[in-house]
Length: 351
Image 1 (tube, one colour):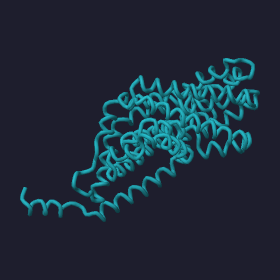
Image 2: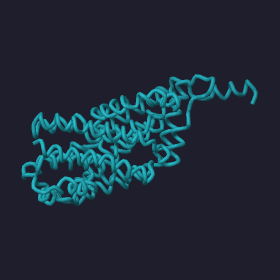
Image 3: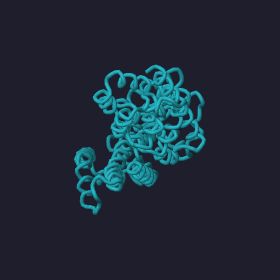
Image 4: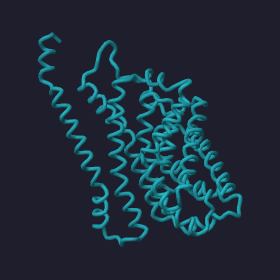
């Protein structure tokens, strides 16, 4: 193509102000829609011929709110990470956080999870974004564990319901599980156990040798990442949320309380197993924690249950299967489970 033709094609494309203005408008629209999800879901479920307060009503309410919320979060996070990748190649990002800096990276990632009150399904988009940006796998797992399990909403509710001591101890143990689990996974060097398409994202780079990308190029990089990744995982998101909503609405609290007393040594591993099919964020499970404590359940057992619900739930595993091999999921669940069991037994022994 001749130089005049190239210049003509470029002049026919929208300029940077139009791209930036369109992106800002889309972000404003995203915020407006996201802010109205809860009242919209309440209205939507209220229009259905379902009796309020029933198990079906609770399950439908959960699904109606979390499905658009998680998909919106997935979209904005992946777009943002796509733009970030236009500034830093995968190799450069890995160099910043790998090796001797990985331990500190685990601490930073787990701490970041405190201020991101996502449920486990919402944290999966962040996991994809971190991995695609070249962040070490162990550091990424520290965030994946911490984000749903330890956040300011959960800590505030724990403080209000059961006191600051429990909230502070939960914070300490939760961060310890996230940091140590991610550090152990990082030591195992299991990047090869990611799904092939995710490994391709890690090795790919949007940087153009010898060129500085324009603002339009960076926006397009975010859009390309959004189309690629969201297109791959949205169906798995809906399946996982649907399974979690069904269980969320029908699992009876009374059954859980009956086996969570202090007497039996097996109570901690038992509640961890029971927690696996249950899906909720930390804020959503805290009212259940309060009810269980009120019925005489042991504190360590209850907190182990809370950690397991938010960190190793079956719906999260379904979602992670899209990006992780079965072997890597097994290692992740195994390492985190050991940490949760240790917290449960230690807490019961101290309190």
